[in-house]
Length: 208
Image (tube, rainbow, N blue to C red):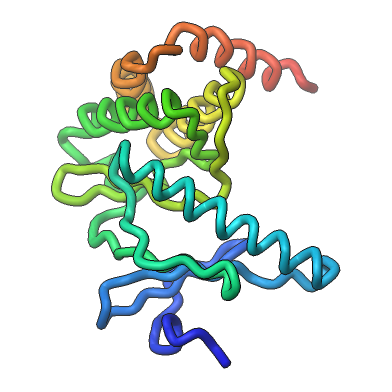
């Protein structure tokens, strides 16, 4: 029997790993991890359970540090995480037209600094995974997140955000990046991360 939490919901997002459902009546979204037919069923079941558990725990911890959707429930058995729906604009769509876009990027930098100082790596740090609501930024989709003390992992997270700015918001790239890094200066490892970021980007330039 299909889980009751998504029976009356509509699909608002679909990725390689999961489907996102929205339930208007409860104001909630549910993320359901999909079965993968190419994996052995027992292994697939175990992986989806572990990833559901990990994402829920990371979101719970992150929510104590920055703005994230509030988790309503999490079921490892059903591989579903239900959370409050953030009624706002996806930053990837809104950032270019905002008058205060530099300030928004500075706030994002401050938030990422808090995550990294708590050794939380987002793993998919793009403007598509940030919602803007009433002047506040909310980080979503912790499906690729993990714990790490490594400066390398934090540098890669910053690199991903730089790439997102360059790809989607290139008209304001320099200003937005400068303000993001200004906010990120709050991280205790700022200098180390920036040094490692240069190495990460050098590897990418000279890989071919």
